[in-house]
Amino acid sequence: MLNFLRFVKYALLRGRDAVIGKNIANLNRLVKAGRVTVGEHTYGGPPMIKVFDHDNTKLTIGKYCSISGDALILLGGRHATDALTTYPHRILWKMEGAGKDGFPMPSEDSSIGSDVWLCDNAIVLTGIRIGHGAIIGAGAVVTKDVPDYAIVGGNPAKVISYRFPEEQRKALLDIAWWDWPDEDVREAVPLIAGKDVDAFIAHAAERDRRLGRG
Image (cartoon, rainbow, N blue to C red; front, side, top):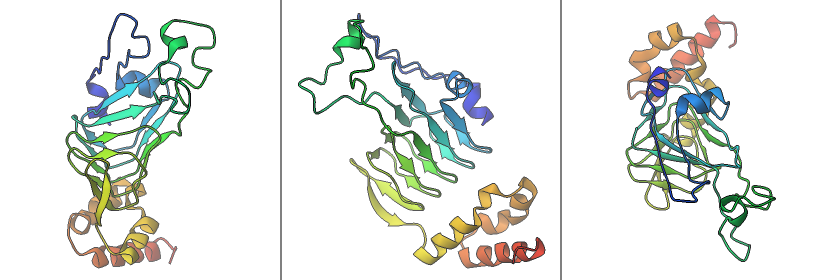
């Protein structure tokens, strides 16, 4: 998390009347304001985060994520597509009702699960949920939710494959190793960093028995 808070990256969309385009993605400010939450041991970046006036969409980033500094995450800023125009007149002209007339359109909060790899130049649109263990390929444009342990790529991003068979995915989600104490994760690193998923699942089951959960 410290790597995310140490640097400030700006995304400026300026023009003479660019009220909606301040878009200053100071992650430290967003964290302090409660708009962004970053889990323990997440590193990289920080990503470019575009924020918009009259919008309070929030972002949660899980633990143990690897996030490229070239990634772009949009928080809010959706234009109305069912109105006569997509132009936010009231905001840019400082008119009464700005931000309350469907400009910007409300969106769900965004979330990135734990153990997610967000690769170079990936773009994540607002209101998206990225599941645990997912990999977002370089240059992918994520327009809809990404399942747990899916590998996605392309524009728009589509599921290319899953990292593990369904039974193993379910077991890993139940285990949720990213929520373990640091010392337990450290002990399991030879397995977590290895390729024998079943061996790790067996290790987690033995851990549960030691803790009286089996």
